[in-house]
Length: 239
Image (spheres, rainbow, N blue to C red):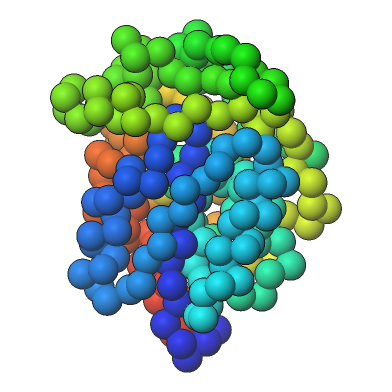
């Protein structure tokens, strides 16, 4: 615990971008918390995590680290052995064990239809994935108004195949030593709800919020629930 109020650092995942946190940022700022929404590179797990670590190092306060989707992989690696991070919040996010990749985890339980919604194309260093525009609303953000989902589709950040298939490098995932909170929707079509429940239990989560009917884009459709989980983690750091 710390007497200093933590800064909340938000890490988006694949097929999203930092503005996807806008509603959550507004609610956190209403409670007078400093917030940084990082532009996750989505190039490779080690380099993405190194980038997040560098951002954290420049913040003159303890940090509550929040990850959405693949961003959960990144925060688990970035926070490993980092005493500056006081809490982890997984928002429809992967919470991997050593060696587990996002692709491996997503296939551990039935229910994900992401694979059939993707388009792939070559880029420097490998292949890149994006969700097809006609599939985006149903697959990623079914509980978000269609017009807003169309904008999200147009601004989505593609992810490399390498990022999704690389296992967690660290031997000691951050959730083993840092308190964690989980919030997810039971209508997530990217990451099966059974996997969310499994990962939250395995991590010994401080609290679990399962939002009925919420899609993978729970931070957009249910910012109150997501902000509440983050505030729990932030307040626990100074209680």
